[in-house]
Length: 439
Image 1 (cartoon, rainbow, N blue to C red):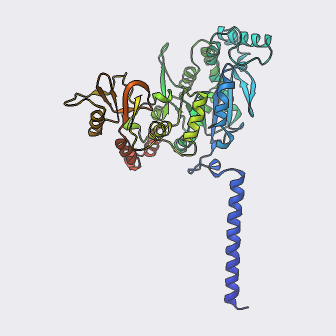
Image 2: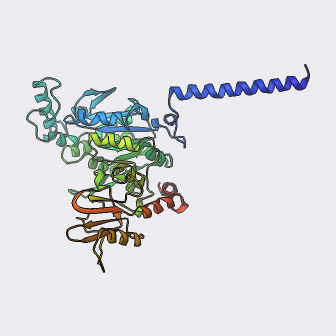
Image 3: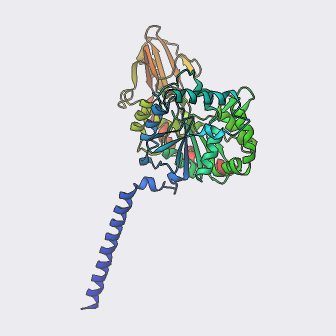
């Protein structure tokens, strides 16, 4: 056989083998676990984040299933290894053993003699009297006692999370929080988990002015911070369990415990969290390009609605979420307004400009005035009865309001979105800069 022919056949055979190997390797790889669950583009994996879901006995059977069917499902890389559910009652939801984390305090004399812990014991006694697992809802004779007990879950819950699974990051949420994982993973892939970080949306506890990160909005803690608080300085936790039995809020006590360990709240990314109802998702030009990590106060039905609208679309900015959660309002680019609706929360006069008409007082004039003042106007509302026109630099998905016509300045919103690709608007560069400054 001529050498040239042999060489040709050898190259052809090797090429075929390479194609076969590449294809079969891809098939095996994608049929076992979808590629987006294996790794984030920056090398970030779902297993890098321990998800801590907090719920209560009165509501867990209603609220947890929608979370476990959507963003906390196995399809999203969540499982019993990298996710836990803490509560005040032990039961099973799907594949998860719900941990009665309050029972972990039973041997703590600073806690087990307190009024709150007694409430917890009384509820369990009444439950046992009515059967081990009665009809779900409020326990017989209770009156919002679940909320009273809730404050005692955070400290033992985060300790349990740290001792159960070592991750790069720990993300604590409530049972009415929806998480947008691509945004979360992108943020955390840019931060150093070996720096002591306690991230979230800051609140103040009025009784002592302690600053803490709001639990329902979401609390993110790095492994370095978790190790400092729940391992290196673990012996000092007992006093915070006692505080939790005396104060209103577990997230506030967790914040106090973190500060006590030398880990202050890091507020650099608090605009990435949304802590209220969908209709209260108010934002202005400065947040159009900012990522949204999740939403709070989401009902079970809204949880599924959000997942249907947001899932599979990658990193979501505030503007992306806005345009996805109100499609019936903004069904097409030409549909810029809606009757009996209010996109700008006209009852709140902050950040509003009242238009002084020089000629006819109509919806068309109100809309045109907003469009002519695009630098300061993202939305408008017109009161049909009083003929009043209000312009606003802030918009929201809105709510029903009889007698109003309201609209979005879609051209301005599209222009702002188009600027998100500019280096000076790239939120990732901001994150990297903040991480460099953070010690």
